[in-house]
Length: 195
Length: 195
Image (cartoon, rainbow over all chains, first blue to last red; front, side, top):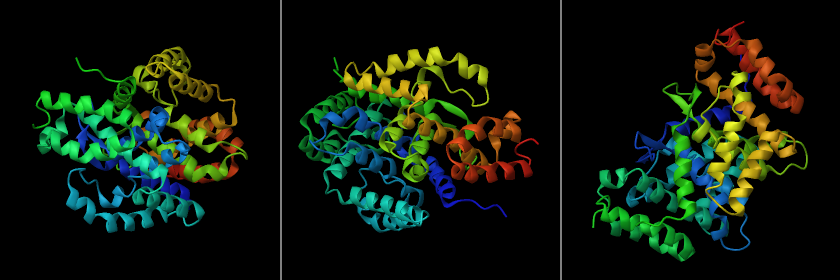
């Protein structure tokens, strides 16, 4: 009988995130984005956008949060950003998923990953807040450069995106918001976001 | 004319890594793995396997290296681990890719990312050595749990994998090697790796 360590079984489990598809398409427009490659993309952001974080922030903790933030989707699936009712209803399912998956490492490491996910979700510490802002920001870039496919498919309006993003992103960093807003305005001009 | 910041254009460029396919399949066996999702998967490893690193290592630097290590493939493509001649020939192409892509951030950030990639490639610092070991280790897990698809397709033998992995991985951490070896032995028994 093959004996496999819990670390290897955890790595195997993580692979399933590559099968969780998001609503957004990759920028080549050839297929939907999956949550594993999204997790990589957003985890690159602290290396690039770290200068827009509040002073004193632990950027490596932000990166760790972003690496793990979507792992619960292995059980709970992806929920579209604009489906607010589903988002709220999903928390208990996601919490159970976090406990099951991170609990596969039945020691301090699993507990640390669960705590990191809980901290991200609670959105109270400086690291969680910056991680959430980056995770809110990147879909605009991916959607814009895919030709607005997800916005068009879902019939999203410019105002809906503003309602969703402007408060938190501009509230956190005006510079970051000023990078995103021109993409949204241009998407409206192009008809990818409804007026 | 839409004015877009260099950070946003860099994020857009990174998205192309999602279109670079590797030889390995994801564990569900439904398609090949791409280099963006592989980068996420291997970047999770310092959080899980950090206890097997040499003492005093900066694990967050290891994570950063793993996040960026394959970005050069946007220009240079992926090279199969067992294609040694192609690997050696690719360095100049990959270096040019690193300069072009990280140079899109024409400041300290781009220089830091280029330096991080050069450090990874040189494989001399403790962080680069651990990052390389993790990157060497994960394909065995993914290949094994996909039913050995890549090994079968390429006609790889058990001995070829041992020649490639055992020296560096066992030399770095016997514990890590002892997690991987049973998968390789079982893959030989199952006929996924040639005798």
